[in-house]
Image (cartoon, rainbow, N blue to C red; front, side, top):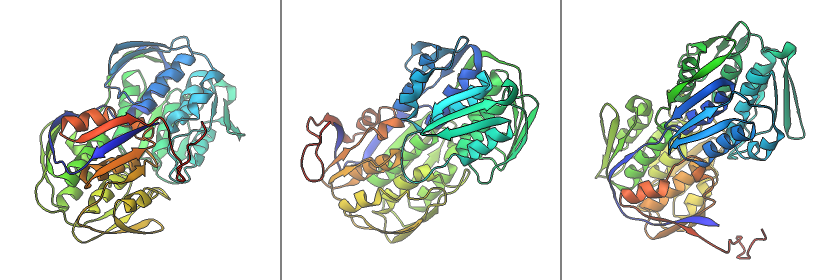
Amino acid sequence: MEKYVIKGGKKLYGQIDISGAKNAAVAIIPAALMVEGVCRIENIPQISDTKKLLEMLSLMGAKIKYINEHTFDIDCTNVYMSDEIFELTRQIRASYYLIGSMLGRFGEAHTTMPGGCNFGVRPIDQHIKGMKALGATMDISRGFIKAQAKGGRLKGARIYLDKVSVGATINIMIAATMASGQTIIENVAREPHIVDLANFLNSMGADIRGAGTDVIKVRGVEKLHGGTYCLIPDQIEAGTYMAAVAATGGEVTLNNVIPKHLDCISAKLIEMGVEIEEGEDYITIRRDGELTHANIKTQPYPGFPTDMQPQVSTVLTIANGTSVITEGVWDNRYRYVNELRKMGAEIQVDGKTAVIQGVDKLYGAPVAACDLRAGAAMVIAGLCAEGTTTIEDIIYIERGYQDLVGKLRKLGADIAKVNDPEPKTDSGIAEAV
């Protein structure tokens, strides 16, 4: 069992490049299933989620050609339905985007309920509502999803989402791309990776307007053609390194970023006493003085992102005063709090609210990653803690961060990925494999 070992207390200095956006990649790769011809996608992050999605397309008959570490040619001209993907679809959340792309390409979809991080109930009811509105029959039973477009092709419709949902917005937009007629989707999410997906599809021949606003209009096309597209930088990866510098102190420049996408994160860090300098495609973070408490409420974009809540909450554990965090997107996203308490953090949770009383310092301890962003929070805690921190279940972290250890070591962190040949349970007895 692999784990991270961190010796904390070192400030971070230097510069690193931010990878392509994970949340854009995991939508765009499934959307490539609908493209007939060679689709070259650049700036793909090398993380486990993207590798699994590329493998899924390969199992469906797509030709995947490696160009370089971050660029792949995907040719889905001769793809077909395949049950061989099911083992992989059960492992990642983004596999549900195959519902929209399969319906668009084949007029039917057959996949499994998605997997991924578990930090609360994340139903796909809005996805189902959208597919049904587009004319698909949906059958979900025993962990499998079967969908069929009446007449073999989806039909445009007017769809109002009951709640702002990133996943449903993406899935319905993908499905509507090749539906007959016009689809109008209202009360949609506005995250940067939704705009990126729309730009990708449009570059392949789609007709999508309004991405980044509350209403998206999609006029269906008969087919999509090949082309080249470069993904945007990862907003959350950049925010995670910003939080790490805030926690440890030091000065770091992040290259290959879109500073506008980071405004909501930058504003809170500045409020906490962190200095931030923005350039055209870089951002510099420095922190020398003490941290100040802050109140945060997570909201859909352009509000403060839920995917940054665990990381910034960790920074606030060593800030002066009392901070209040309100989780406005997901239930039960405070599972990581028990891990931070092992390191000396003082946090009280009541429903969707966490009250953090800042302490002088955290102390190294054995902890585990509960999910992707909670795992990143554990890394940040270990970097600023006194002593040694070991983090287990790092498989969650590597779902969304490319070469996290290498990038942190480049900034001066004392972090290593090691192999523990005898994983232990809490009782100290080796688990059976």
